[in-house]
Image 1: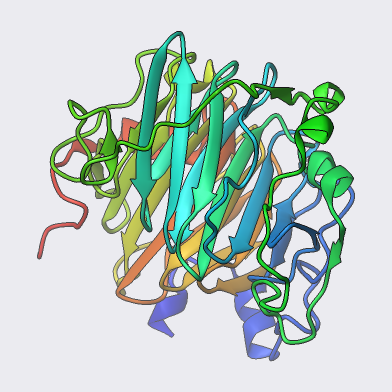
Image 2 (image 1 turned 180 degrees about the vertical axis):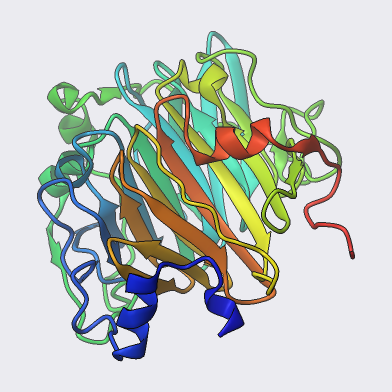
Length: 365
């Protein structure tokens, strides 16, 4: 019974009664159309097909009251760009590599950068940044966080069909390889979706060791976050800022976006945590803004609304603002991607009680 330490009596009673995802009021297989607590398994969210790419939306504009949209993009490698170059004036776009490889380009004010992103790597695309990407590996999954929410409407407008798979295949391997990007005439007509075509942009192809220009650091040293909310930047896995919080077990917080980079609109971090110990009491959490976790590794337990949820790799839980919840790891190592609305969420709270750390793992004792 030690693994339930700190969990409410109501939750424990639910567990002992044999509750599971089949009779849960929080687990869903369709993303809600209004704000409410919910969890959805990897690949269960509805999506659409654009070329060879399948876009799923575990968090949408309606489900988050337009706080943010969370996107999973699955596709095979391609010799073509995934989308023609463009900018956004309203939306801040975040690219996180969940699996496989893709290349991301950014250009702003004459400063052009490109990186080859592997699992755990990140790229930030602020407003008015020309950008595009190309998927490289046969089984690639990109996680996108776009703020504000509602951007999924663009993909449904571009889609050739909605996507469904009785076998939950990440994408349809029978689709014939083609240019996944809509034609220039379509891209040029998408300004109502906050997409402004930049058809004169020619992506650089001079990467050395996964990066261009040559004076940039990529998987060879530390990456810093941008000093403002206008500058695009990249963070290689485990090479960004790190903080160790030991208030309730060990947690490593690696911020990818802080209020400085988002102008206070959202935060984005990875959080790694050790297994809940028998002498640790899980703390209640409650924040004003909406939030979501996506599990990257391990098993995340979330206690909310009288239920205890067990989330595995790729699963997503959405937590509305002003909702009390608890979370912890049920295995030796769990890592999540955390998205929070506003400037004061879980990650900023954890960082405020942490110390600067130089490792992606915690101490041995």
